Image (cartoon, rainbow, N blue to C red; front, side, top):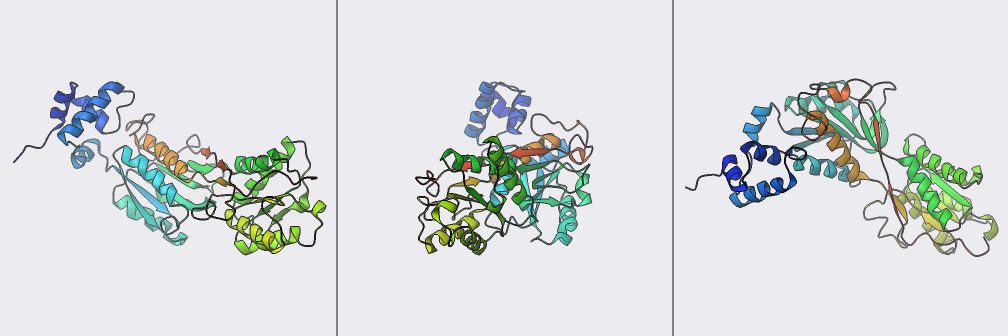
Length: 363
């Protein structure tokens, strides 16, 4: 039987020390091993079909190399799974695996889900939500380094660090996009204020008007809900029976489903999109925005980017990426002290498609 390759075999083939092999193959090469040497090590490992012994590594480092993720609905939702995908990609890149538990929106299961993961000796924890919202953080998350993604700690003065979308900037850039096309009479259809996303997106819309030196027409800002029918009825209120000179030339929506309702209302009224009314969505919802007729201009939520950023920050606390170390402050430092309890804002991306166009002639 052919002998299995060892780290020493890889070191000899690559012409480096055994410790350099360990650093590179366990995700700690950057800043410790020259890039050229890192590549030689990876090439040698591939040639020898070598992979580190994860069990031995865990015992040596006193780490399980497992990150626990609790989600409220992400696993069962078709919408926000990309957050976990982004987090998992970073974890795998650094030799970790993720274990995910979904509470299916049952907050009473939060603490028990965390406890189940802690029983598996996870090195860190992440909580992920569908939709931006404050989170009543399970207290047992403080036992290991922890972070939040797409949600933020509801405790005002202390709590966990969070990675969230920059909703204000997104609302501002959405309004700025149609303003750049010449629109000035711009309506905004938003969901209810129970979720922080809607008021933050409206705030960005207001900031765009302020930056342009224009007043906001409060009659153009309607909180109608989040679904297609809400968008339809909101648009009918803005457009039905209104003279062309008095109707908005662009309607911004707080999500893509609202935008679909707006487009349907325009068709009901014999209006063309975007020739008569430009329509802008938000979220870039998979299998919705791109396939809509016309394809929706929208603000894409940075789901995968949020997951990746949150996992990178968490692994820094665990001590497995540059910027963190196993002896820095010990377990639970991500949850301790207000200095660590920061919010990282990830920008949304403007996606221009067919539903927005120049302001109609004469407006």
